[in-house]
Length: 175
Image 1 (cartoon, rainbow, N blue to C red):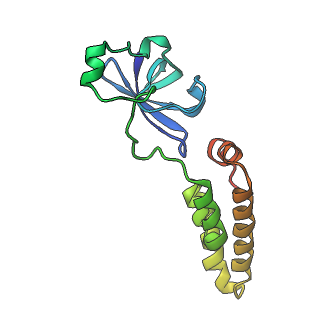
Image 2: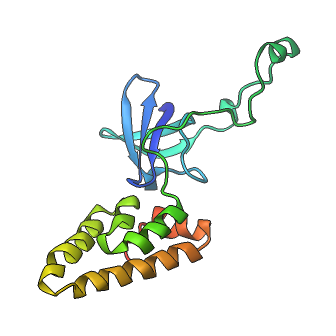
Image 3: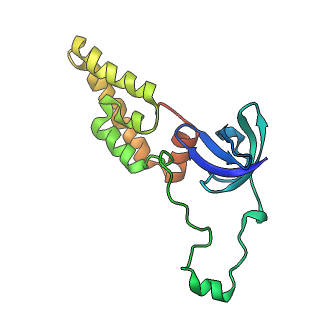
């Protein structure tokens, strides 16, 4: 079956395809068989398993538009080689620097975990800092702050590619 990739969320590792049959199908990240991340607007081939798309592969040369004639090129503004696809809400990945600084400054309350999409871990850090902090005279809050500081330093000292591979694609939740 063929369709157009509508959206892909790195945080949820899930995407949506508007199929040529008029229906919309979801797919999980491991079903993406292309190189790199799925991009909104790409034409794809896929198979169905129930209501889910599987074996999602980008269409090859068939999706590349033909070069415009000289008269068409003058009538239309220049476009980049890959075309322009406006950003789709919910598909942006967290910035390494933002996550690292939030981990250092607000790590004890788990803000960096929420930015990475790890809600459970963020709630754990928040609960330990606020809840257990009252019963331990702040000792547990200090421990959470140290964890946030260490994680922030780790994030900021990694390369962008290592950060994406480890925390965005790999979904590593702690350290």
